[in-house]
Image (cartoon, rainbow, N blue to C red; front, top):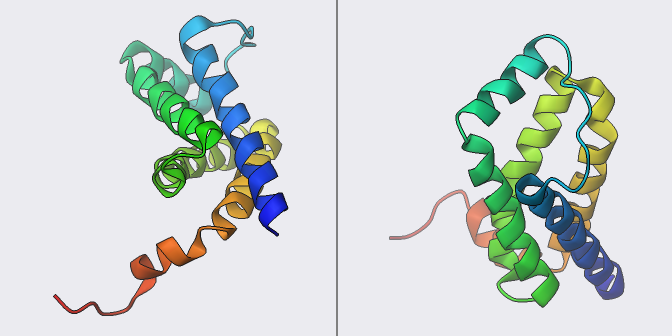
Length: 128
């Protein structure tokens, strides 16, 4: 499982490195905005420059994953980004759901090797 987790970590890092850089450098052409609420939502995020923060939150953990440094922190930073990708596509633009599912699967495989780091977050009660 260690090799699978390592491959998933590298693929996840590459995925978010490419799309995080694309947010700043625009080397992958973007198609038309989805119709309805999805297009309005992306338009509002773009107009408010909120996406710059999202792209930075994709890019920084991607570099950490590829360098194999602070991997639990990188996975923690990517988790809400992946949740938002999946929720956006599940609720507003279902055609883009498969890439979000792939990112989720890679995240789970990469995080499996670091599960002992996250067990403290799942305790019912913690002594102060």
